[in-house]
Image (cartoon, rainbow, N blue to C red; front, side, top):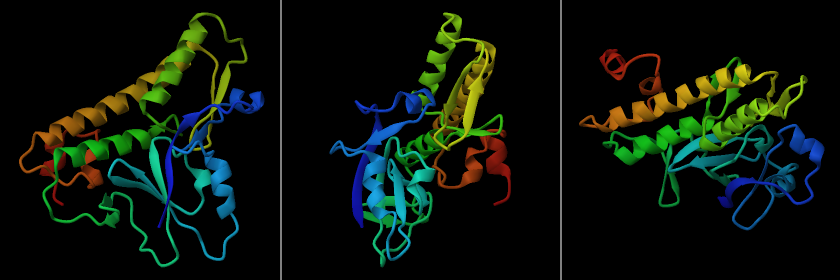
Amino acid sequence: MEYLGYFEEYKPENAPENLLSLGVVFYQNEQDQDFYELIEQYRDTAFPRVFVLLSGDFVGAVVNDLETIAPAGAKVFLLEEDDETPEVSWRFVNGVFVAPSAAVATGRDVSNRAETLINAGTQIEGVQFKTDEASLQRLRELIDAFKLGLIGSDGRSYHTAAGDLLTFKSVTEVEQFYSQALLYRSSILERSADMQQLDPIPDPSKEALWDVSKTLSEVLSEPN
């Protein structure tokens, strides 16, 4: 297994303005290696490459094509041909991917899972949108730009991390979208806090626990 790095957003000095205006996001690791340049060397290989994205201590994604995801805030690993392929929600413990067990979960487990869900985001108006702080900040800045009259009648378009095109024509459209994103994020954080008050703490890898359309009591009362 090869560690490719922890990736964060950055703006290349010579980034084409047309790409930036479309909302294309660039990422680099601790060694200042550009994400897309780094993975180019793995495009044509003798066997299917498997990449694992780690968010906190949990596996957030397992993919063959890194160009389909956004690695912001994630550690990326490349599996070797004989490595066991983990599944989403497995934990990374002492350099090894570990499947969920019957062990009692901790508050940190719950918090890490909440951050994974927030980073993955939710469907808003048919578009998968990340609800991390950086994504919400872009919406707030866009709201300010509309209010200051900096955006014309054509509006402003962005590509999401999932590759969807978002076009906003008015401040009202942005505010409505922002409200839904903020509601999802706050609901996940509230659910995380509620779960950490339980004794014992339930396994946070169970997706049903994060169904914020129901109360936690309703979810726990349902048969497994």
